Image (cartoon, rainbow, N blue to C red; front, side):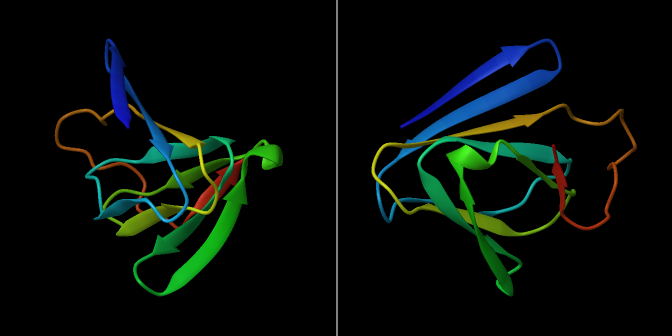
Length: 102
């Protein structure tokens, strides 16, 4: 299940996934943050790196613009929230590496 909410320029997309279900490989032209609210996921980056995120970590994953990624649920009833604000016209935002924000 997927729901999207918008407040001005801020967009939040909430996903509810069961074990093995995925947000297919994709990328965005802007920076966005991902937080696991419940459950756990595997995050695959550019088809080369992968790591797990759990809801108990209390951390956001910040992904730079234009980086391929896929998120797969490792538990039933996993809830993920993605948030982004597109950059001003003509700007892509930071194209640095993946960071975590406490």
